Length: 223
Image (tube, rainbow, N blue to C red; front, side, top):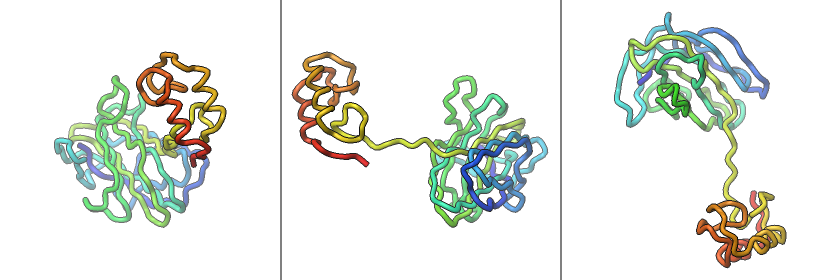
C-alpha cells in the first residue's frame, strides 16, 4: 500500500515536454505543479513524511509510507497515464489521484503493482484516468509501507488512445466498403489466426460468416 503526499496546483497543461530532478511536495499545500506534458520527475522519498494514508481497493492495507505530491489544474478534458515504471524507481510504490479535496471519497484513481515489468513487480501505473476541465488533481507517489523508501521516477503523459472496434472493417480504414469485401473474397476459405485480416468472426476460417460481417456493416463509417 502507499501513502499520499506532495501536491501543488498546476496553472495550466500545455502539450510541451517537461522534465526535472527534484522531490515532489510533502502535502497538497506544497505539491509540485505539473504544467505541461509529457512530464517526468526523478525524486526521493527519504526525507518525506506521511501526509495521507490510502489503500487501493482489493489490496492488503499497509500504512505510514512516505509520500510525494504533485498537482494538475486541468484547463481542458484529457485522459492521462501516470506511472512509476522505470529502472530509476527502486522501492515499492503506490499511486493515487485526488480530485479537488484530500479525502478518501475524492480519490478518482489508485494503483498498486500494475507495472508490467517482471523485473519490477512492485511499481505502480495508472494506465488512464480522465481529468475534467476546471478541477485540480493531486497525484500522490506513496510508499507501500513505512520501510519502503528510495528513488522514483514519475511520468505523467497523455494516455494511449484506444479506438473502438469497427465491425466489418478489414483494412483498418475505419469504414466498410468494397476494399473490405474484396479482402474477404480474395482470402475465401483460407485458414487464418482468429481476428487476423479478413478473418473477422474468430473461427479461424474466412467464410460466409466473415462475408456477412462485412455486408451487415456495409457503408458504415466508424468514428
